[in-house]
Amino acid sequence: MTIIVTGGAGFIGSNFVFHMLNKYPDYRIICLDSLTYAGNLSTLAPVMDNPCFRFVKASITDREAVFKLFEEEKPDMVVNFAAESHVDRSIENPGIFLETNIMGTQIMMDACRKYGITRYHQVSTDEVYGDLPLDRPDLFFTEETPIHTSSPYSASKASADLLVLAYYRTYGLPVTISRCSNNYGPYHFPEKLIPLMIANALNDKPLPVYGTGENVRDWLYVEDHCKAIDLIIHKGRTGEVYNIGGHNEMANIDIVKIICKELNKPESLITYVTDRKGHDMRYAIDPAKIHNELGWLPETRFADGIKKTIKWYLENREWWETIISGEYQNYYEKMYGNR
Ligand code: NAD
Ligand code: TDX
Image: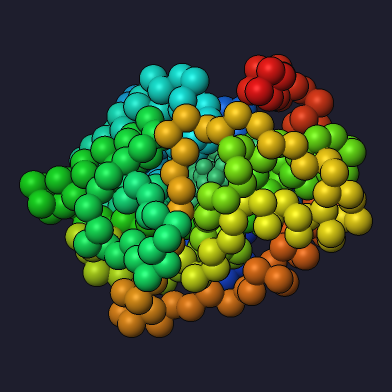
């Protein structure tokens, strides 16, 4: 079995590469990643010498490079993680989100059509469903919830989902889609809420909470997401969408307070800043379908997962300090300087 994993030098993709190499020692895993600001080759250092692993630096928007790779490797499956993934960046600069997330998806699927494939899996997000109100805790996103996007990021992910389903219906491409809630864990890029708050708290810097901090996200430990995708690509039904989430809703402000407590830092570091434009209020996944059909259940409780994550950031300071000492400083100044 040969699997192309796009975006495997990023947060979830790298965790997926490790999971697959570990669980299936006879599989060949090819990571296709263009190493944008969010991709980090040092993350993949532990597997670079593994004979079952190959890293290829190329963009999923580069049709020639993608087709050449398919020609060489004749993959059985593709799992497409590669994307521009940060909502705030999509508000500043939507264009690259459309190119990577939509056009890149098209090119990957065109290659799958040409060379034949047993499965194309699209890693999507719960953000395609828009948001839920805070005063209706009885409401959850199911796979039937209408697409209703808020940000250029979520609109680009929803567009890609529609294209994937169109390739299934029109060309019979054997596709599956997963829509997961917010992930957290090792190798999470420090522009995202949890790693940003951990890094800032460790440096005694202000902790910038958008708006009132009441927005709710449904957090899932990254390994549980990887295990769900593993199940879907092996046992999921083609043409189907599977929601992934662990019923773990938390308000942003509560997450930040937990991080302060775990790191023994004062809550006085918390600073309320101007809200995100179009900020989604609440995400909450109903994971009944993946549970009933594939037997998936999350294994890591948030109380344990956040401790493991903080420990990882304490033990791997070099990984994130290298990132925040580089070009990231310009990004931080631009996004937070006058907020
Ligand atoms: P990330 O930003 O950490 O990593 C993205 C990776 O894709 C990077 O390695 C980057 O170099 C690579 N990449 C970007 N553009 C590329 C291109 N044109 N060609 C090849 N590689 C390219 O993202 P993440 O948080 O790991 O998210 C991975 C996927 O999961 C995305 O599709 C995202 O929409 C989805 N998702 C993320 C979350 C979350 O909480 N992080 C939740 C649900 C779904
Ligand atoms: O500095 C911050 N302060 C703050 O209050 C940052 C970076 C975020 N926030 C808030 C905004 C959100 O309500 O925290 C919440 C989480 O923000 P992000 O970490 O940016 O994640 P989110 O916007 O929820 O999107 C994430 O989950 C769905 C991923 O980045 C997406 O790729 C995924 O699809």
